[in-house]
Image (cartoon, rainbow, N blue to C red; front, top):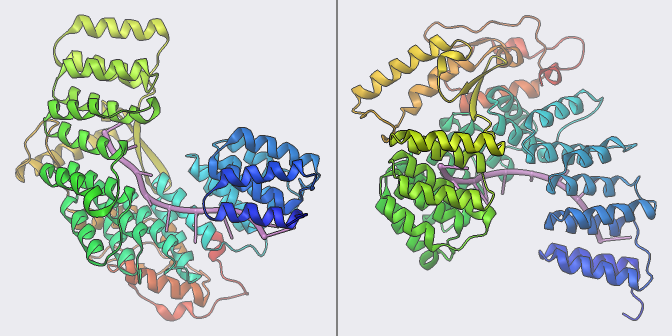
Length: 519
DNA sequence: GTAGGGTTAG
């Protein structure tokens, strides 16, 4: 073209983005400016998208300033792409600034902001914003938004909110959407309900690699190594090509179920059989797998043989350090913690683990000197914690004395009981054992314990066998759609629940359904 | 000619 115009330039940029070449798109943008062709809103939405793909904050900011200069800062699409770009560049505050500055928003801009929160470990903010969205008149979440919301529920372990989102998915007919279904599989697994993950997974008509991978990873994290590998084999039988993440799941499964030889075989077959070249994250799994079973020298050799950048190696050497502590290998622990500290990666954790390794070996002088060094350099380790949400209250657990947390004495006695049962099943004490839990049994307890008033409120009239009945909310209005959704959700994940009085749902008073109020 | 969603190791 002798004189390409703004549309031809933008089309070309969009084309490069489509084939995964965002850098080329940026070069075209520069060429466009050099040719004195003025960019418009279409151009900026495209070029901002290129920055998102590259997670290039500095270029993104420059483009943002151009957006202001060219006066397209009020454009809806441009703003949504800016929110997305700031989110992907881990700059949530600027994403929010753009969002707040918008005169008019649509479901895409809301989704971009919710996703930005979710992708930056701010699940709580994501859910809060989702609630605000639902409070707007005439608003309705679509499958993009629901996928993000389910993801936020997963990261927070919010089972009840996740189930309500699931009901919304069913109500709106997004159940067979591959992306949404993957998010649900992942959410249920992360919320401790692998059985539900399986049920959702089995309803996907033609699952792609990602739902398969979600299921493999979920089962692996649950300690169901063999189950996880069975799904992997099924996937191969169906000629679905595994990707790098699938192999992380497979190796994780082997590692956490003591299947070391299988794991090594999978590592070696990855490239040859499946064309996936192992990278640092796979070697980290294998180092963990060897380390967990006490094959520290092999793990050490493997870690040393891999050339890594500091940020990539943090997990690799951190893994080796943990395994060294587990088996009291001061020699390897010293090398691993030295690597971490010198690379300025996870310094506080490295100090603490090293100190614990010395303590385990009874080398108290070294323990004191490390603690002194930490004080001297002002290194502080934020304690790690885990939590579980029961009836809208979060119970937080820190490592160490469980009796200090809320209802700690009950927790401690439950732990003693679990230990007793584990010993009955042949578990050998100490931190080196592998624990596997009977999922079905646990899931049932969870249903009774966690399935609190929220779901009963939303769906009403539910009774559980064994004589336990959840409180019934009177005058609940529920539209036919919600009711259908509820029946379906019962079939999928709540087979133990029985709807007692179906007919009462078929009329609802004074107009609209109350489902909106239950977010 | 333009914007949004899912799986990742210690």
